[in-house]
Structures are given as C-alpha cells and as structure tokens.
Image 1 (cartoon, rainbow, N blue to C red):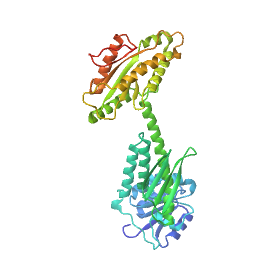
Image 2: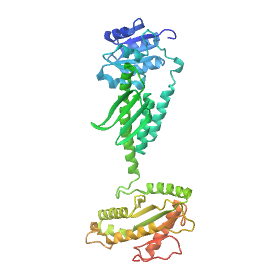
Image 3: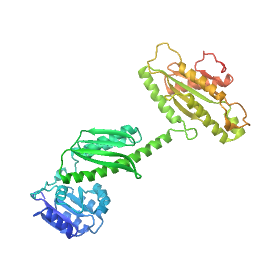
Image 4: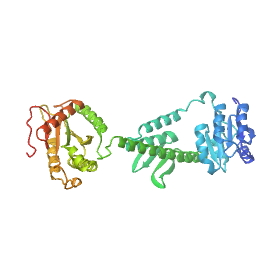
Length: 432
C-alpha cells in the first residue's frame, strides 16, 4: 500500500461499475458481501475501501472490523437515501465519508480523495491514530460546549457558534436558537443554511459560510450541516434537562422559593464578593409564631397553605435582587444585596433591610389568610432577627448564629417582631 493506491469494492455490480467509471485504470478488487470484505481487507492491504450499505452482512460491525484491521485505509460508504441514518451512525465506527446514490463520479472521487489523473492521496499509517489539528480543535470546542450545559443559555449559544466553525472548517457560522443569536468567524462565499426543528416547530437555524469550494465539496458540506443540526438538537435537549434538574435541586417544592442549598451557596458567594469589594450584606431569619398550633388545629394541608401565603407575601415585599429562601420547616431567610457602592467606615446597619421588615410585618398584619378559615387558633405573626455583614459576622455561620440569636430574643420579647442582632440594642415594639 505504500507505493500504489488500490481500491476494495464491496457491493453489487452497479457499485463496481460506478467505481470503475469514476476511477479508470485503478487497481481494484471486488467482493459482494461484508464478511468477505473483512477477510480481504487484511489480505489485500487496500488503501481505499468503498462499500455498499446494502451489501449482505452486518454493516456497522463490519465497518468496525475493517477499521481495526486497516487503521490507515480510506473507508467510504455508498448508500441509498433511506439508509443514510445507518451510514451516519457508522461514522463513529470507522467510516471516513459517504456518498448517496445515484453516485456522481466527481463526488465519489472527492470522498475517496482521488484525483482525475488516477492518483490518490495515500493515507499516512503513522498518523492514522492521531487527529488532524483542526479535528482536535473541534473536539476541544465541543468539550467547552458540554461544560456549559445547564448554565447560561446565552453562553451555550455562543459556544455552539464557535463549535460550528471548528467542526465544519468554515470561514464563519451563525446560530439562532430559542430567541438567542451568536456568530463566530467571518463571511464566506458559500452559504449553507439549515433550520433547527424541534417537534415540527422551528426553534432556530444555523448559517455556515465557507470559502469557495467545488460542487462535490459543497454537497459534503450540506450533509455535514444536517449532522451538525442533529448534534445541536441533542445537546440543547440535554442542556434543558440539566438546567431543569438544577432548578429542582435548588428550589423548595412547597413554596417555590429557593431552598437552603441555594441559600448557603449564594450567601457564601455574596460574602466573598463583599469582602473583596468592601460592600455590605444583611441576613433576615424569621419563622411563624406558634406554627405547630395551626398544624394541630387545622391539619397539615392548612399549614402548607399558610407557608405558601407567607412565601408569597415575602416575595412581594422583597426586591428582585434579594435572595428569598425557605430555610427549613416554617423558617425563612432573606439575603439583601444592600448597596453597590463600597461601605463607608463607621456606617451602621442598612436602612433598606429595616424598611423591609417593617413592610413585611405590616403586610402580614393586613393580610386575610383565607386558608385558615374562621377556626384559626390565632392571628398569624412572625418573629425574626436581622444580622449584618461585617458588624455581626464575617462568615455565613457567624451571620446565621447572630440572626438566630436575635430571633430568639424576639420570641422572648413577646413575638411578632424582628430585632437587630447585637446585645446592646433595645428591643423595639412592633407597633412602632
């Protein structure tokens, strides 16, 4: 094989004749079935193999066996349109390229990398196990896309655009997906566009732009575009599934608020940023006074409804940038991102958080908790504690301890109030 290119043709007489017309004078051997082809691959040492997807035998296992026997051979499949999915799946098992019948002579020569004068670019056995640099870049870029699964959809679409360029070898590529658009590279002379269809609905499109190419290369690029759309669809579905699971893992099922896992992660990140930027942060921790009485008197369904209504009121009173969580049981937590500007030396507790707890207590007092009905054992009230960074603690554990201590003081002071952390602070009356 080192000196003269040769071809092993696997299939019927029609394929043999088509190959001989496309490659006049080429050294060729022919066999009708895939099992014989596997045996001949090792014995003949052909540099090129063209095999029919309709040849008798198990197509994919035969391809895999031929690739193991002849790792440097150029293997091309010939397929009718109905078997194209089978041939596509065989690419990962060793197919280098494929052509769709009726087979054009130029297309076949291009797939086999065979020139009109009867010469062929012989595969390099020493380099057969290594990916070309462009292919390595494509795999690296795909790995980067996979790392973005479950995260920002904007980042993911940008990753898809970059991968389209590297996977297709195009000058540039653009993708529109679910209302987001990203582009990579530059414009090209040949434009190939494909819709992204999800359950018969158009979710977006890709546009791949190539430098000038011949007709056979363009047909190959069009087939590649179809395959790239399939990868994007599968990847986007996996991204949505992972994002949904992440939301579930960080959301409280009963109230729809963030859960304790989310709270701890976000508070740790906020405190790390606040230390670096000299900003302040405030934690509110509260629970429902005598919550057990509602469960005992009205049942757990009424208790669950009460938790949901408290969560709804808390969301109404909070700002979009605040982190509102169900901490556990009837206990809730709010983390305030208080000010974008650096902290002023000597400043005290933020007034925004104090204003919120006043507003929240009024909202509870004025709300009609219809879920409790006329048999409610008591008027709904809450007690809580406010702790601020850096005055009451520098870590999550320290802030929680300070806020919990203030909550216990609020209970001891008669409940229905929210107190600031710190032993020297007066306990204000909730009516004030």
